[in-house]
Amino acid sequence: MGEREDAMFKTTGSRWLLPVSATVGLSLDQVNFLACQLFALVAAFWFRLCLSPKYASPALRHMVATLFGITFLLFCFGWYSGHILAVVAVNYLLILKGDINNVHRYSMVTAMGYLTVCHVSRVFIFNYGILSTDFSGPLMIVTQKITMLAFQLHDGMCKKSEQLTVEQNHLAIRVRPSLMEYLSYNLNFLSVLVGPCSNYKDYIDFIEGKHISCRLKQHPGACNGQNGHDKTPDLSPLGAVCKKLLVCSACMSCFLFITRSLPINYNIDDHFVSHASFLTRLTYAFFSIQAARPKFYFAWTLADAVNNAAGYGFLGIDESGRPSWDLISNLNIIGIETATSFKTFIDNWNIQTGIWLKTVCYDRAPKHRLALTFLLSALWHGVYPGYYFTFITAIPITIAARAIRRSIRHYFTGSRALKLGYDVVTWAATQLAIGYTVMPFLLLSVDHTLIYYRSMYFHVHIISILAAVALHRKQKPRDPSATTKLTPPSSSSSSFSAQCQPVHSNNNDKIN
Image (cartoon, rainbow, N blue to C red; front, side, top):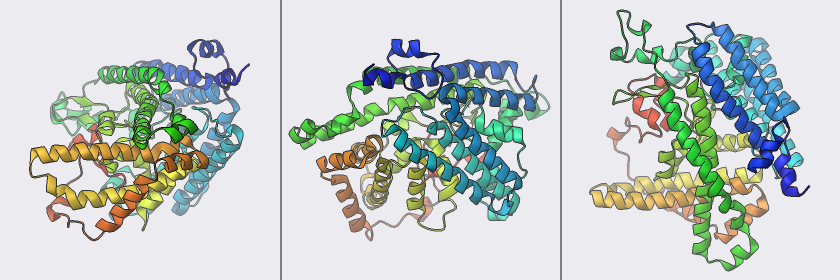
């Protein structure tokens, strides 16, 4: 058997679908993942219709969601799923028996420490030839949930309301979760494989049947009967699910027919680097990075559709009076592809991870918040050097982008033509800078990263550092009247900030 075929069949989980893997030309771990997510989609509809809170108790819903989730882990990862189950069990003992004043620290050290150990082991086990859907993905999601819950539990049991922000106070957990609640939150089949991470209180509201009604309280016109929100319409997520499945289909088509024709590793091909012009290399880098996105779009949008199919993810009523199901959406594709600033791109990419970083690090760090947040993000992703190149590179670029925006943007807002020209230039600069920054994230190794950056003459590093230094003292003072105005929304969820719960009004302020 050749190396290509061996990679196709390599998996740590079930081998029942080997014939399917050989037929469709996808690796077995990818086939197992897709099979579980498609089964989860069907199970989610059944969960919403047959195990509705009207007919089933919260305990039954917790139990079924957990059992399905553990089954998916065993099917996809075999005995490797023990890593995920172990870290969940240990951290539940910590919040149950540990000092509540330090529970957030214990959970962060334990969960992130174990995740890092597993990341290190993957480097040696797979030697950069990592599986696309190995056990570390679910472990990363579980780490987010464990640590977010611990911080919110500490907020609720150890701090006074006046010590918390409005958002923290709303999400604070006042009572330790039961074992079933904890297992269900961390291991439920809706998010166990690919996420997204969501707030514990939101998830419990969903299980107990209060997920939609608590948001419709904000809209008296959406409720029927004398009892107001006690009699709420049964809003169907079918339209949102179908729309997201169409996006998934388009992304899968792009992956199969475009992504494979523009391999990332060609950016460091010896012949290409030595013979192609700088402009040609820059153009190929741009399009190969664009082509690498659909697989992420597919996985996150499908996960979002699964949650919606179960009735989870209702955000509120939008300005036109239509329901939105984007509460736990992990990306805004239009926002990503049209981003005109580094921050806007970050705000629309991996949204729930950004919220987690904001919750456990950015909002709580006493100083150096930006650097610490990027460092935590890199550590959470893994120990491959490329991750650290990406996030360290992002720091001067973010600082420079802020400086440039504050220094020159106001010169272009006076006319529509100038503003359009400014937006076009900043869009191109943002997309090129993003490609330059995330390339090491995909190349992984030091050698490959340095080959690429040398071929690009480190131009983005140089420009960013020079811009940040030159404009540091020349920034235009911010208009005092603008201090209370949020930046443009990072996703469709932000448009409901005045209507829905406070926790969802700050999605666009994850890393400022």
